[in-house]
Image (cartoon, rainbow, N blue to C red; front, side, top):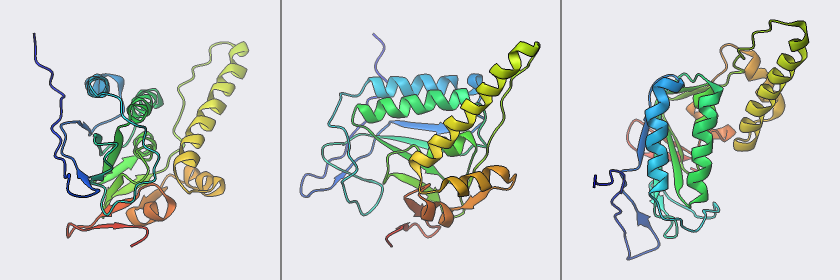
Length: 224
Protein backbone atom coordinates (compact mmCIF):
# COMPACT_ATOMS: atom_id res chain seq x y z
CA UNK A 1 0.00 0.00 0.00
CA UNK A 2 1.32 3.41 -0.96
CA UNK A 3 1.99 5.61 2.11
CA UNK A 4 -0.14 8.70 2.71
CA UNK A 5 1.72 11.84 1.67
CA UNK A 6 -0.20 14.58 3.41
CA UNK A 7 -0.06 13.64 7.10
CA UNK A 8 1.46 16.75 8.68
CA UNK A 9 3.60 16.89 11.80
CA UNK A 10 2.30 19.01 14.64
CA UNK A 11 4.51 20.75 17.20
CA UNK A 12 2.47 21.31 20.34
CA UNK A 13 3.38 23.74 23.09
CA UNK A 14 1.46 22.26 26.03
CA UNK A 15 2.86 24.63 28.67
CA UNK A 16 0.52 27.52 27.91
CA UNK A 17 -2.49 28.51 25.84
CA UNK A 18 -0.55 28.71 22.60
CA UNK A 19 -0.25 25.88 20.13
CA UNK A 20 2.50 26.40 17.59
CA UNK A 21 2.00 24.14 14.61
CA UNK A 22 4.19 23.17 11.70
CA UNK A 23 2.36 21.20 9.03
CA UNK A 24 2.87 19.71 5.60
CA UNK A 25 -0.51 21.04 4.48
CA UNK A 26 0.84 23.60 2.03
CA UNK A 27 -0.47 24.64 -1.38
CA UNK A 28 1.27 27.03 -3.77
CA UNK A 29 -0.79 28.89 -6.39
CA UNK A 30 1.78 30.68 -8.50
CA UNK A 31 0.16 30.79 -11.94
CA UNK A 32 -3.04 31.62 -13.74
CA UNK A 33 -6.35 30.25 -12.44
CA UNK A 34 -6.65 27.81 -15.32
CA UNK A 35 -8.26 24.37 -15.00
CA UNK A 36 -5.33 22.49 -16.50
CA UNK A 37 -2.70 24.44 -14.56
CA UNK A 38 -4.57 24.15 -11.24
CA UNK A 39 -5.93 20.60 -11.53
CA UNK A 40 -3.08 19.06 -9.53
CA UNK A 41 -3.23 21.72 -6.81
CA UNK A 42 -7.00 21.24 -6.48
CA UNK A 43 -6.66 17.44 -6.27
CA UNK A 44 -3.83 17.66 -3.73
CA UNK A 45 -5.75 20.16 -1.61
CA UNK A 46 -8.76 17.83 -1.51
CA UNK A 47 -6.51 14.93 -0.45
CA UNK A 48 -5.01 17.05 2.34
CA UNK A 49 -8.41 18.13 3.67
CA UNK A 50 -9.88 14.63 3.36
CA UNK A 51 -7.03 13.18 5.46
CA UNK A 52 -7.82 15.42 8.46
CA UNK A 53 -9.98 14.23 11.32
CA UNK A 54 -12.80 16.74 11.92
CA UNK A 55 -12.26 19.14 14.83
CA UNK A 56 -14.34 21.80 16.55
CA UNK A 57 -15.20 24.52 14.03
CA UNK A 58 -13.18 27.71 14.49
CA UNK A 59 -15.36 30.68 15.50
CA UNK A 60 -12.84 33.49 15.29
CA UNK A 61 -12.69 34.29 19.01
CA UNK A 62 -9.02 33.44 19.52
CA UNK A 63 -6.63 36.35 20.11
CA UNK A 64 -3.20 35.64 18.69
CA UNK A 65 0.05 37.62 18.68
CA UNK A 66 1.03 36.34 15.24
CA UNK A 67 -0.76 34.41 12.48
CA UNK A 68 1.37 31.37 13.30
CA UNK A 69 -0.28 30.76 16.67
CA UNK A 70 -3.20 28.35 16.58
CA UNK A 71 -5.89 27.64 19.20
CA UNK A 72 -5.69 24.22 20.87
CA UNK A 73 -9.05 23.14 19.53
CA UNK A 74 -7.92 23.89 15.93
CA UNK A 75 -4.35 22.58 15.65
CA UNK A 76 -4.31 22.12 11.87
CA UNK A 77 -3.64 24.91 9.37
CA UNK A 78 -3.94 24.68 5.60
CA UNK A 79 -1.35 27.14 4.26
CA UNK A 80 -2.13 28.58 0.83
CA UNK A 81 0.56 30.75 -0.79
CA UNK A 82 -0.91 32.91 -3.56
CA UNK A 83 1.02 34.91 -6.15
CA UNK A 84 -1.22 35.08 -9.21
CA UNK A 85 -2.99 37.48 -11.50
CA UNK A 86 -6.16 35.37 -11.31
CA UNK A 87 -8.07 33.81 -14.17
CA UNK A 88 -11.15 31.59 -14.44
CA UNK A 89 -14.01 32.26 -12.02
CA UNK A 90 -14.89 28.54 -12.29
CA UNK A 91 -11.47 27.59 -10.91
CA UNK A 92 -11.94 30.14 -8.12
CA UNK A 93 -15.22 28.40 -7.28
CA UNK A 94 -13.44 25.08 -6.86
CA UNK A 95 -10.80 26.57 -4.56
CA UNK A 96 -13.50 28.43 -2.60
CA UNK A 97 -15.44 25.20 -2.05
CA UNK A 98 -12.30 23.51 -0.75
CA UNK A 99 -11.69 26.42 1.63
CA UNK A 100 -15.25 25.99 2.91
CA UNK A 101 -14.74 22.23 3.34
CA UNK A 102 -11.50 22.78 5.26
CA UNK A 103 -13.17 25.28 7.58
CA UNK A 104 -16.08 22.89 8.10
CA UNK A 105 -13.58 20.26 9.30
CA UNK A 106 -12.12 22.72 11.81
CA UNK A 107 -8.98 23.61 9.84
CA UNK A 108 -7.52 27.11 9.87
CA UNK A 109 -7.12 28.33 6.28
CA UNK A 110 -4.09 30.62 6.34
CA UNK A 111 -3.51 32.61 3.15
CA UNK A 112 -0.31 34.44 2.32
CA UNK A 113 0.07 36.94 -0.53
CA UNK A 114 3.80 37.72 -0.66
CA UNK A 115 3.61 39.97 -3.73
CA UNK A 116 0.46 40.02 -5.85
CA UNK A 117 -3.10 38.71 -5.95
CA UNK A 118 -5.26 39.91 -8.80
CA UNK A 119 -8.90 39.35 -9.69
CA UNK A 120 -9.83 35.71 -8.87
CA UNK A 121 -6.61 35.32 -6.85
CA UNK A 122 -7.62 38.32 -4.76
CA UNK A 123 -11.07 36.84 -4.17
CA UNK A 124 -9.51 33.58 -3.01
CA UNK A 125 -6.97 35.18 -0.67
CA UNK A 126 -9.62 37.13 1.24
CA UNK A 127 -11.55 33.90 1.89
CA UNK A 128 -8.87 32.67 4.28
CA UNK A 129 -9.83 32.31 7.94
CA UNK A 130 -10.27 35.78 9.48
CA UNK A 131 -7.22 36.53 11.59
CA UNK A 132 -4.99 34.33 9.41
CA UNK A 133 -4.70 36.27 6.15
CA UNK A 134 -1.17 37.59 5.55
CA UNK A 135 0.39 39.94 3.00
CA UNK A 136 3.97 40.91 2.31
CA UNK A 137 4.91 44.53 2.99
CA UNK A 138 5.12 45.28 -0.74
CA UNK A 139 2.17 43.08 -1.67
CA UNK A 140 -0.84 44.24 -3.68
CA UNK A 141 -4.40 43.19 -4.37
CA UNK A 142 -6.00 44.01 -7.70
CA UNK A 143 -9.78 44.32 -7.51
CA UNK A 144 -11.21 43.48 -10.90
CA UNK A 145 -14.66 43.01 -12.39
CA UNK A 146 -13.37 40.35 -14.74
CA UNK A 147 -15.12 39.26 -17.90
CA UNK A 148 -17.51 36.59 -19.04
CA UNK A 149 -17.12 34.36 -22.08
CA UNK A 150 -20.66 34.22 -23.42
CA UNK A 151 -20.93 33.61 -27.17
CA UNK A 152 -24.40 34.44 -28.42
CA UNK A 153 -25.38 32.71 -31.66
CA UNK A 154 -29.15 33.26 -31.50
CA UNK A 155 -31.26 36.26 -30.59
CA UNK A 156 -33.13 34.12 -28.07
CA UNK A 157 -29.88 33.65 -26.12
CA UNK A 158 -29.30 37.36 -25.45
CA UNK A 159 -31.38 37.47 -22.27
CA UNK A 160 -29.75 34.28 -20.95
CA UNK A 161 -26.27 35.69 -21.57
CA UNK A 162 -27.22 38.95 -19.86
CA UNK A 163 -28.56 37.04 -16.84
CA UNK A 164 -25.35 35.01 -16.67
CA UNK A 165 -23.27 38.19 -16.66
CA UNK A 166 -25.44 39.72 -13.93
CA UNK A 167 -25.06 36.56 -11.83
CA UNK A 168 -21.27 36.71 -12.29
CA UNK A 169 -21.23 40.34 -11.13
CA UNK A 170 -23.38 39.53 -8.08
CA UNK A 171 -21.33 36.47 -7.11
CA UNK A 172 -17.99 38.27 -7.24
CA UNK A 173 -19.45 41.27 -5.41
CA UNK A 174 -20.71 39.00 -2.62
CA UNK A 175 -17.24 37.54 -2.10
CA UNK A 176 -15.70 40.96 -1.57
CA UNK A 177 -18.50 42.38 0.58
CA UNK A 178 -18.66 39.23 2.75
CA UNK A 179 -14.94 38.97 3.44
CA UNK A 180 -13.70 42.56 3.71
CA UNK A 181 -14.73 45.92 5.17
CA UNK A 182 -15.01 47.55 1.76
CA UNK A 183 -18.25 49.36 0.96
CA UNK A 184 -20.36 48.64 -2.10
CA UNK A 185 -19.51 52.10 -3.46
CA UNK A 186 -15.76 51.60 -2.96
CA UNK A 187 -15.95 48.20 -4.62
CA UNK A 188 -17.76 49.64 -7.63
CA UNK A 189 -15.12 52.34 -8.04
CA UNK A 190 -12.26 49.85 -7.86
CA UNK A 191 -13.88 47.44 -10.31
CA UNK A 192 -14.32 50.24 -12.85
CA UNK A 193 -10.64 51.15 -12.59
CA UNK A 194 -8.17 49.13 -14.69
CA UNK A 195 -5.58 50.21 -12.11
CA UNK A 196 -7.62 49.19 -9.08
CA UNK A 197 -4.58 48.23 -7.03
CA UNK A 198 -4.55 48.24 -3.23
CA UNK A 199 -1.32 48.37 -1.24
CA UNK A 200 -0.74 46.11 1.74
CA UNK A 201 -1.53 48.98 4.13
CA UNK A 202 -4.78 49.73 2.29
CA UNK A 203 -5.65 46.02 2.35
CA UNK A 204 -5.05 45.89 6.09
CA UNK A 205 -7.31 48.91 6.63
CA UNK A 206 -10.07 47.56 4.37
CA UNK A 207 -9.99 44.02 5.76
CA UNK A 208 -8.43 42.24 2.78
CA UNK A 209 -5.77 40.89 5.13
CA UNK A 210 -5.18 40.71 8.89
CA UNK A 211 -1.40 40.88 9.02
CA UNK A 212 1.45 42.46 7.08
CA UNK A 213 4.80 40.73 7.16
CA UNK A 214 7.36 43.55 7.12
CA UNK A 215 10.65 43.18 5.31
CA UNK A 216 12.42 43.19 8.68
CA UNK A 217 10.58 40.00 9.66
CA UNK A 218 8.03 41.56 12.03
CA UNK A 219 4.26 41.15 11.75
CA UNK A 220 1.92 44.11 12.16
CA UNK A 221 -1.87 44.01 12.45
CA UNK A 222 -4.52 46.70 12.35
CA UNK A 223 -4.38 46.97 16.13
CA UNK A 224 -0.61 47.60 16.12
